[in-house]
Length: 406
Image 1: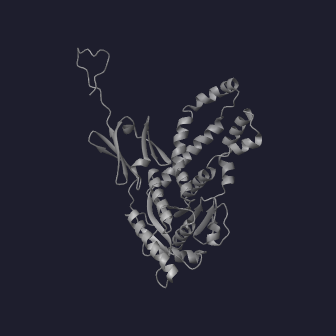
Image 2: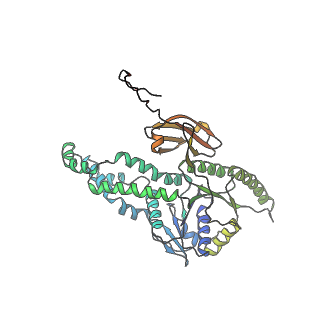
Image 3: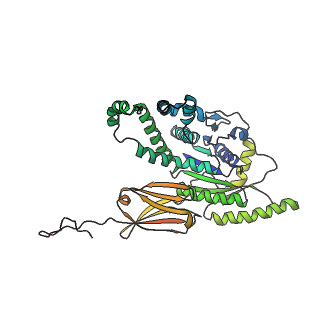
């Protein structure tokens, strides 16, 4: 199964591009689902069809779904919300205010991810195209599986039987209701499901596609998006430059626009070297409906197969080197001054600007020491030195209570 995610700055036409690509897949006979995670659902308008919260057919092989966050929230988060309401009630918080406070931050993004997982597990689809929210929201959405798994792994009790036994006594002592099994299970289930989402989205059959228009501000945003997506370990397999003015038959005003766009397109080709850059022409009217969308996709992709799994370097890799290891993390366009690196126990924390990723190190690296780091050619390389091994003490040697080490 192929999974393609489309994102870009608001207003660049990512929904149209996602819909056009999905239409092309369906016309090739692939059973295709287009799923929107954008709160401002516009897929129904793009296909000029009525679309519901469940997969809705718009053609024999093409289905469209706009996630109903409220319905999924009540189904997936009900147990936890009930506990939080009891907790806030104990603290004297007004019932209405408590209701507002217990809405999970980023609920729509979380539930959209869980719906993507459910559809991928159903086995119904050959191709799932995800119309993501604008870039900033998409970055938050794609970071959620790892962030929540890390958080739950540290705040959840490691031994639930102990919590079950102590909960009544601790509740009486503290006066605060402790979570029951159903609450603990709900949070653990959420963590496990989001771990599956991350596995799905980092699989080699899944990739992100950036949509932009040939404008300097938009191109700069796309470069930053590539850096952040790489930080979180997601593969970007191509760029779609949308609304490109043709030179042919252009009057003086359009000719100026076309010339300015060519300058930006040259910058796009240079910036995203190694990735295909497809161009979709600016059309005289909105591409609405399957016929117009298919025409748009055919013109943009040309002879390329937009559904092919393209070889994309893995954003995160570890290799042995000399007396240790080197961890390499792709950070294209990142500047040295905006990258920070720190070590917290078994975790490596990488910060790029306002975005942070906590990397749970594999066992070998968790025991090792960081011996250096450098940012070169769009890659962060972190060197780890093997832990020093204690030397055996010869018979009859007095060590004074300390262990000899190399």
